[in-house]
Length: 126
Ligand SMILES: [Zn+2]
Image (cartoon, rainbow, N blue to C red; front, side):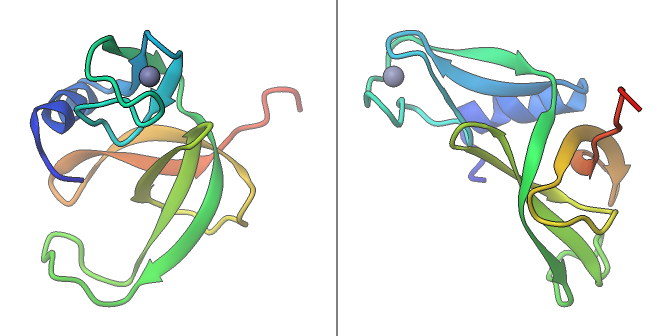
């Protein structure tokens, strides 16, 4: 994610343990990663933020075996979680899970930073 002023706002929320999605008031679209314009109606006015509870679904996963980030020594797994329709978040995946699994975005200290992490969604009914 390019760290422009929209991403900087998103990361500031992450540092407070909040998962935000950008919301277009004009066409009621949620989007992530954040952008200067709405990806649906292409307007730059009316973009705001909504807090998300972190419930998501794992849509892809892989193991990183080589990296240029010394704070994240390989191997480690990352996943892609769909947090809302069309809104995907790439984050650390400490537990091996099948694609399609319900997951929860939480925040953990990893590599010296407070980062979103994908964890299994606990079954609150069982
Ligand atoms: Zn829009």
